[in-house]
Every structure is written in structure tokens, then in C-alpha cells.
Length: 223
Ligand SMILES: Nc1ncnc2c1ncn2[C@@H]1O[C@H](COP(=O)(O)OP(=O)(O)OP(=O)(O)O)[C@@H](O)[C@H]1O
Ligand SMILES: [Mg+2]
Image (tube, rainbow, N blue to C red; front, side):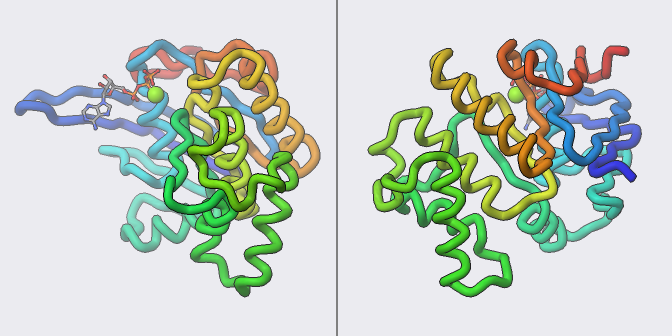
């Protein structure tokens, strides 16, 4: 069984009474342990597809299965639960809470986990240690460099022990060398823990590391 499966996904946006067809019949199966890149030109629909796989957005038609579970008829509460239990997110602009400390940002990701606060703190510390940021636990995100902030975001994504991590252009705001470090970190996690990563990216450095590259062009997968 595929970890994530999207079947015949269409997505339309409506702007000023005109409909824009952004995804035009996407079919994709992603297996456990993959380090998969979705690439394609700007505006081709990569983020839209990632948001649908991440249960943050619904397709206009088609079906989405996460870990064999059909999500298309779920309520927003049920979708929030799938996200909290099964999916980690890494974004281009890090999306950390500026008022929370680094460790609080990581712990926030465990809000819906049925773990004690001691356990949550321990998991958050372990995740920060994995990304090499233990000594920054009490700092605020804005006191960190971009690369360090993205490391916090990775810790936040993996601390949930998600089934898969969705990373939308995770290196786009980083310089070449910092980006390399971030990719190496995710690749290591992928190899050691078999965590599945699904990227949207133009970054050749990530593409070079991918097990599989899916190309999107104008809302369709290029075969
Ligand atoms: N909320 C929205 N409302 C209307 N149109 C949208 C919305 N979100 C995206 N679009 C449009 O859908 C198309 C695909 O956008 P999407 O963000 O998925 O592209 P992308 O492949 O991620 O591009 P990029 O590489 O620039 O991030 C674009 O034409 C965009 O303008
Ligand atoms: Mg995008």
C-alpha cells in the first residue's frame, strides 16, 4: 500500500468569476521511505499539490489517501488530526512563532500528541539535538540565522514522528552552503529513520539527492 496516494486530482481556483484550472488530473503514489522531489516551473501547481497531500487544502475533485485512509470526506477537525498525527511540514520561510523560544516552537508541534509534558520536552530536546541546536533551545527564532531557523523547522517537523514530511522549497531562502547542510540533515533522517520526504523544489542540490523526481508542467505530470 502506498503511504500517500492521490487519484485524478483536479483543482480550480475562482477569480473574478473566471475559473483557473491549476491541477488537471494528477495521479501519484508515494511509498514509505522515499525522498521524492516534485519539480516544475513557477506556477505549475507544486505548492497546490503539496497542500492537498498535506490535508491543508481540498481538491475540486479526485481522491486522497493517507496511509490507506480516505481523507476526501473528512471534516476539518478530522483533517487537523491527520495533519497532527501523520504529517510534518517545512516551509520556505520557516514559519516559526517569533514569540516562542526555539524549544517551545518544537514542542508546539506536539500539542495534539497524547504525551506528558515531560515526555514532550524530552522529545523536543532530542529533536533539537538531532539538528545540532541544543544550545539554542532558549533563544527566540529571530536570534538565529536562516539556516538555523530552518533546522528548528526540521526539528519541529520530525519531533512528531510523522509518516512523512512535506517540504515546500525548503532551501529557497538559504545560501548554497547552508542549503547543502539542510539537505544533508534531511537525507540523514531519511536514511536512518526511513522518514519519507516529499519536496517541491527547483534546487538542483535536492534533485541530485532524490530517489525519484516527478515533473509537473501546467498542472499535469510529465511522463
Ligand atoms: N489561493 C489561490 N487563489 C487563486 N489562485 C491561486 C491560489 N493559489 C495558487 N494559485 C494559482 O495557482 C497556480 C499554481 O500555483 P502554485 O503555488 O501551486 O505554483 P508553484 O508550482 O508552487 O509555483 P512556485 O514555484 O512559484 O512556488 C498559479 O497560477 C497561482 O497563481
Ligand atoms: Mg510553490
